[in-house]
Amino acid sequence: MSILNLAATIFSIYFFLTVIMAHLLKRECILKRDSLSRYAIGKWGFMVTSGFIFIGLSQVIISWGFFNMGNIIPAILIFISAIGVWIVGLFRISEKRCLLLIHETGATIYFLFFSLALLYFSLFLSKNIFTLVIGGLTLILLLGMKWSYPDRYKKNSKFIVPKNQNNIYN
Image 1 (tube, one colour):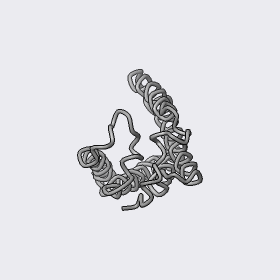
Image 2 (cartoon, helix red, strand yellow):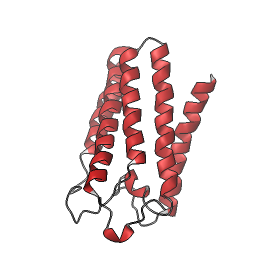
Image 3 (tube, one colour):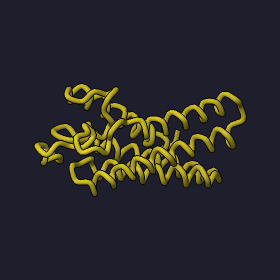
């Protein structure tokens, strides 16, 4: 295993561990109800934000690997999804509509391009029906998750940070 493969694996595990730690430390958030972006607000938010940055780095490394193997299309798709996840991490959800729009745009870029990369991989690079089915189901699942949050744009939505949590970067 090369150093880059090891780094991508470690960065992915780090992201997974930050999500678990944030869930254990932020009892006001419920994983089934709240997006990961809600975990990035408040006292322990730096953990999830750093997780977003590291999962983006992992995707850049994976993208580089595809590029070196001559698979340009999945390399570009995964690289663009990494940019989306970095936008999600750097522009946390906020009561400010502009920041929320930037954050949502990053999430949409991530979900769309990562899903397309998985679908491309399962259609053109894999040679068995199992990965084709998994790729198609993953595309449906990821896109469904993205647009399934109810009422996320309403003013009284739980997705938007209440005004009493002004200091979201603590």
